[in-house]
Image (cartoon, rainbow over all chains, first blue to last red; front, side, top):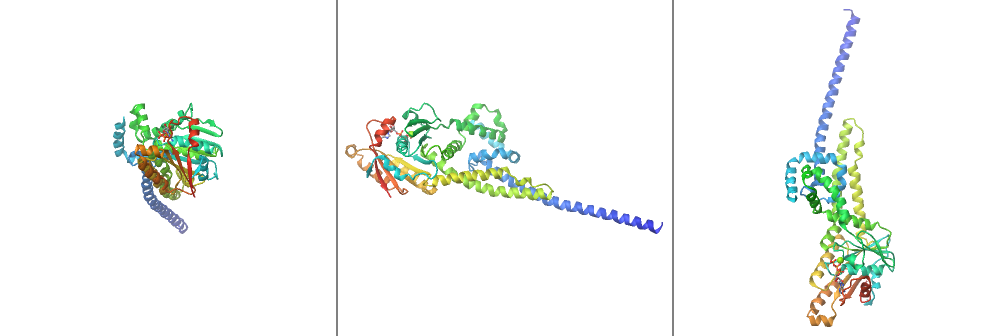
Length: 103
Length: 327
Ligand SMILES: Nc1ncnc2c1ncn2[C@@H]1O[C@H](COP(=O)(O)OP(=O)(O)OP(=O)(O)O)[C@@H](O)[C@H]1O
Ligand SMILES: [Mg+2]
């Protein structure tokens, strides 16, 4: 194999390796960022849930937030309300029982 | 002791913004509606005046022969009157409430309309909200210089007056939690290379708007230039006790009554014969001692034989009222 060809091959190999390394690094970075975002997301979910529970708690037997406040915010919080309901599926049954009491 | 109800104007500062709201409260049956009309007549000498009754008993309708609720009628000179009915407000707010409840409890859809409506009517806080919205409306209703509000039963009135403070408490907390949520969303969006639309949070805007609205209302309720509280009582132990409780409550809000009205005072000789003179005197002296803002008007109205039941009979009562001004 001529020296020139070897040089070219070597350069290509180095480039390939560098490419792999940089990809790996990117992936690694991504993983790190992803990990950080995941934990932030977890915290965000907690806060959103706390917020929705505070706003709509008066409808679930925690009569603290004035009713009008919940009503005014509700059109802007449909997604969060839905999320809260998923989490609170368990005591939704309890609330349904409470509603049956009136009906 | 001056005479003539007009003296009472000295206890009502000229409004710095329209309207000045005069809140008349007191135990059931002591003469709130009667006194509201009396004050309305006096204020109408000074400016355009509306007497609005929030009382469910709707005595104002018969009193002034109004043919409809929720409509203003010219009564006399610059005086108008309206009987507020919660019906419209309750069903409007009720619809929002049902909508929300159906989202929260899908099972609700199967209940019949009747029981849903029933639940809404009894929903905690719904009535207060309807009244609160009406009070808010009145403070910005600048067609009148004065609006005299004949309030619902004391317990309900105090809950309504307390609502702006409750709103403030919750809005402050919700805003600080929401700001954390929005900044977290922002950090997450940035890490993922997304734009910063998340900073435009409608919930945060709404919270700030609501907070501002009730902060303004609270200031108006507490401002002597915008609001005068009138406590009406008969010279009997229970109504006086309620007037004392209301004064304490106003104090806790940071306010004081500006006018105290002792209504249906039995003339001394008759009170002696009936053996109630002492009870009456004790009640009157308690009313005179209530912590009142300055200048304060103490109004004393005698019991009359013919039960006042028309505008003319109220005019008759006006000339019998006696006023003491404390400054
Ligand atoms: N000074 C007075 N002398 C005699 N009767 C009076 C006097 N003031 C009011 N009344 C009568 O007492 C009754 C109750 O008065 P009014 O309706 O004004 O009280 P209210 O506090 O508004 O009652 P409610 O709590 O039911 O709304 C009425 O029949 C009224 O005509
Ligand atoms: Mg009345």
